[in-house]
Image 1 (tube, helix red, strand yellow):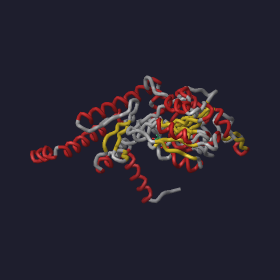
Image 2 (spheres, protein in one colour):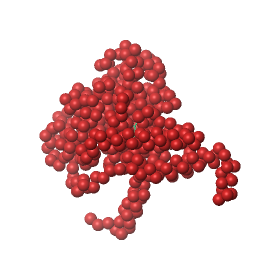
Image 3 (cartoon, rainbow, N blue to C red):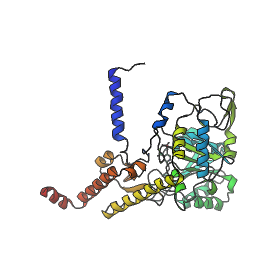
Image 4 (cartoon, rainbow, N blue to C red):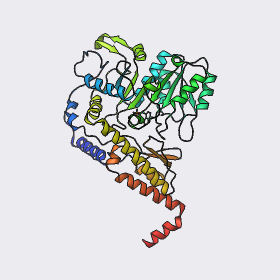
Length: 390
Ligand SMILES: Cc1ncc(COP(=O)(O)O)c(C=O)c1O
């Protein structure tokens, strides 16, 4: 196999582009402060994690033993164990969310998925794929579920089992739906524990909450049936990935013996990425729990500091407690495009991940530009004076 000069040049250009962008995307939660070079040699193998890591695999080139360690770690993080829960390394948060909804649909084929207007957009794809009924619940201005509205919606659908898709950190605002409130509203309309299903979408904050003091309810001990987290967000991975965990009593329901792979299958896809479990495994094994906690705390502290700096200069910025998402009014298009800020309606956000803590230069630049833009808008004369003097 040989590439033409032109094609080699295209790859070189793309490499240059990646180097330039690598740590620049301030609006996205993807950590890039990793070094997995020691794992590069595995890219020469056709590693495939088809099937269930808990079984004796027929296809020999897999990373099941590493995947098992990863799942065990997340079980611990989410207050469960391999006796009670099962899970696998997914292609990302979306697949994990779809898996949770799939399990719920198998249990409650006539169920309704409840989620808020701030839930990640991919939930609608899941709804369409699985052909489930849904009900979108309003949320407050900071992205948290309106529990009164949930209760009303539950009351108007008394014959259909609720499948709650709870946000454990919304994409735009980092808002966390209160599981205690949700459960109390479910109880209020007369539902007992086995009459509903709760899936937790913890794409980004699933790697934050286990490392904060007094986290809000988000895990199995708080009554979730399944939980999904992205691996390429707060951990960081060159290939998108994630982890989904669910109670074994649910995953057993979708398990089928497949002769071709000489094992049982209960994942969403057939062939599965066998490299990504290695990245997650290396992160888990290569850093102590104290270091993981420190990394999270550093991100939260810098997020708070960022919000305060913006506020000091008249930009209304805020963040939820335990969130690395700093929200503020949408700046000019030129600015949000330049710094890859995420925007929705009239709001924008910066997300603090590991690389920004390691090197805050880019963050400082955007803060300065945001402040300059704000000053220019509020006191055009002062800026004109400055320009004249310059
Ligand atoms: C809250 C939330 N859920 C789900 C997703 C989808 O995750 P992924 O991109 O890993 O599929 C995201 C991604 O931004 C997210 O923020």
